[in-house]
Each structure stands twice: as C-alpha cells, then as structure tokens.
Image (tube, rainbow, N blue to C red; front, top):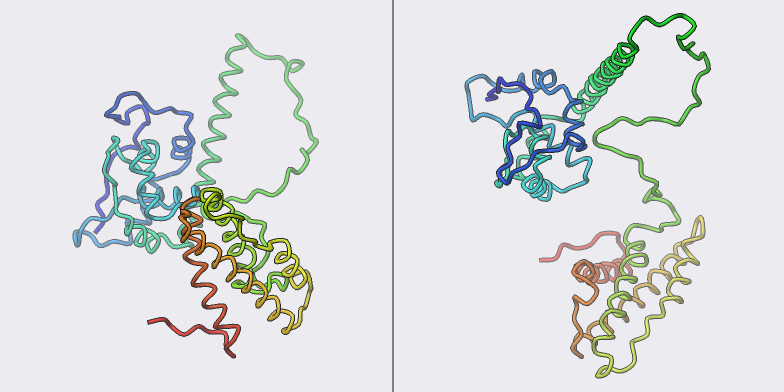
Length: 318
C-alpha cells in the first residue's frame, strides 16, 4: 500500500532544527531538491502499490532521494543511513519536516528502493529532472531580465538595444547527464598486460601491502629485533614487469612470474610473523592494512593451489 502525503514541498526556511539555526539556501542538496519535480514523478511510483492493502510504503521522495545520495556520494547502504542520520541537509532532501536523530529507514530498505525504481525508471526520472531544471533556469533568467529592464526607468530605444550575436560559441565538450554513473579511466580487467585479476592483486596490492606493513612494524622493535627483514621489492617489481609489459606472454612465462611473486609474498609473510613474535603490532600501518593482510593470507593459499593444480577453480573450504 502507498499512502500519499498531500502537502506542498517543504521550504528549507521551515525545516526545524532542534539545536537552533536555519539551513542555508546555498547548499547543493537544497538547490538540487528545487530542480526535481517530486510531485510529477510520484504519480508513476504510487501506481505500483495497491490501495488500502498492506503496510504503507516509504514516500517516493525518500526512495528516489536515497538512491541519488548513494550514487552521488558512492556510499554503501549502511554508510548512507549513517550519513542521513548526521546531516540535516540530507534529511531535508529526503522530505523530512524536521531534523531527527533516528534513521528514517533501515539499510535493508535500499533493496526495495532499487526494486521499485529500476534502471529504466531512474533514467526516465533523469530526463524529467533535466527538463524541469531547464524550465526553472529559463524562468529564473527571464525574471532577471525583466527586473533588469524595469530598473531602466523608461523605454529603451532601438539604438540602445543590444544586437544578438549570430556567432555560435565554441564547443566545450560533451555533457553526460545521469544520476548513477560516471566515466572512469581504467583498463579493462581482461587486458593481457594485467595477466589476470588474482595475479594483479598478488603483485600490485598484496606484495606492496606486506612491504608497507614490514616498514611500519620494524621501527617499533628495532632495538630488540635487529636489522629489518629484506623484501627484495625492486627485484620483485622487475620480475613482474618482464611479463606484464608483453602483449602475449607465454603460459610458461606467466607461471614463472606467478611462482616468483608467490615466493616473495611467502617470504614477506614469514618476516611479518617474525616481527609479531618479536613484539611488533599489526596495526602499525593502520587498520585498513591489517584487513588487507587477512585477505592476502587466503590469497596466497589459493594461488598456491592453482599453481600446482591442473585447474582454475578453488575447492570450497569447510
């Protein structure tokens, strides 16, 4: 069931803040809210629900607004809800009448929002938002022009009127209008220079993570541990580039590179375990490095199995 709220769009001046003050009209979320025809878009959304049956669904503005915020800020569902709880501008953008400390919906509701507003509906909303925004901009420009003309204090002669230029302005590039995508300059994961996803992680991320952790852990126990363990990072990098820079490396070259990178990784992991035994802290390089280290241990295990086995699948661990 969908229960439509018959009220005008809330003005940001009337948004109640329990800690005092008012919202600023220059905020990007308030400006964006003014460009979206919420009432026009809500008609199609309300048609999906039965009348008088079931629990009332969340308002359309809250559903579409949550998807827009998630896409623009690149947040997870859980982080999105936390940001909404802390930000009064985001709560206004979702249509709330006053700031509240509790979350307006559970992160699991984002699953239903995506089902009720699939890609085709979002694309249609994008087109309507653009058309409505252009109307608002043209109306604002016309009003500014009328105000400017009325301040002259009399009629304007033909000699004083500006002659419109017929010269077209130069093209400034292509405009991409979409609420949920943006171009990213990355190489395709099937590029031969990347070998494959697992090997790239082994060389480009896993080995470097172990080197960063060794560099951070050793200074803490330098006096008791002694000389820092060697990582051979330059040699490992050169061995990887010998294969990665080739257009079509042979299978035996790829296997040799994988064996070399696994050897460097296993030696670095053994050095990390030795540093831990000597009193080193795994959080020396930050919690994010520690989380990656947990993945690296499993990655080394899987890559070792794939190297020695005649298959490209990993048996499921019980």
